[in-house]
Length: 498
Image 1 (tube, rainbow, N blue to C red):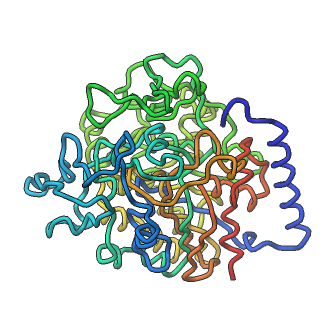
Image 2: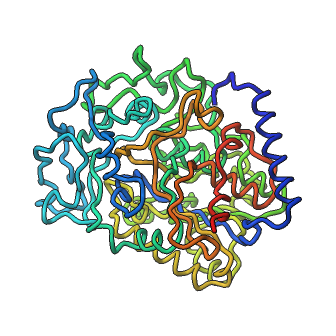
Image 3: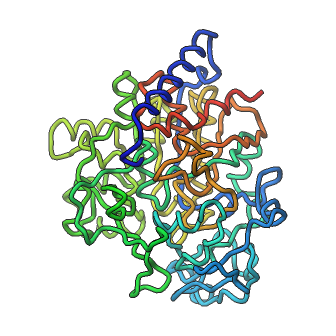
């Protein structure tokens, strides 16, 4: 997404995409034409190795070790003798955990991946780990040109970044069951470096949001090698701030709230309304309905909440303001009659999702963002509760009026700071499939549908933009203005498998 991206290159890619679509139509019906509804379930902060590293037949931990792709080095490039412990708090020091679990030590661990659930008898998928730093330049540095050898060095959680869940822990999960019965994509990369904010934005526009005139205090600081400068006040943290370094433009890349939807905790430094074309714009232009459903949205959007309701929203629901991607756009400005009408039509509470699935009134394109309690984010969401929500949605769809024609894409916004050994596309070899903002670390992705080959493990290279490309192709939309989203493989390929 560099400013000097050549329009000529984009035009060539766009022309090729249009030609391919035209050719497909000329040959008759496409497999994706059988899809009536695309549903995207967007979970949180897990790398592929972290959850599926021991899944039989997938590119995982065993292959990484065999290929020597797991060694971690310190910032100077020297291999660690053993994995460094987390900074400040221990690996399970989370307020929801009981005292005896919060106090469990990291221990002496070899310089290698390790099973989190084997760290102590008390640990299971019902116990949450602490959060790990996951920011734009930090993630780019951890990947280190594809070597993936600086995850422990550039993390406030140290060696915890190398943790994964064993086959024993994951075998009975809904995620693994759905993967066995449907299609698992083991080379799917998060769309952008860093955290949830940017990757939610990328999910709907294949872009980074623009922040012209951003305060200098919000800019990131890099050293001569392009790595974020250590924060002297926070051990293990870095000057990886809300906006890119000055030399990289005017893009917001780390968590920043919207002028339209925020909890008031960020002061005046709010991201201005966005006007870049997004997938919702393209769908509306073609007369195709869409909706973004989110746990707690109706209560969060209210300006007359009581103090008790606000506490409930922050505590029991754990609503995440920066996860509401479309709410950053001027189109959904609730201070104007038109914007409020658009918000009401397209941005909805999860309470409406269940009813719409059961009644068969779900829009053809649906995004579902679970509340913080149910999204599997380290630090505040257990794996088990999120897995239960996956099971609930999958079951609703399997019993709904669209049970024979839906495509449920279960994926993760980003890796959450956890290690993965597969190098994302980058550099000249990747061509237009990589740019300044990504793609980044590999994340788990499943396609659950009666229209996919059962038990498929698809090794095709995809990223978050592949979802947008599928939607664009299925509904014959005008492509989004991103050379990368035109160059990546479309998830349509999953439905071509026999």
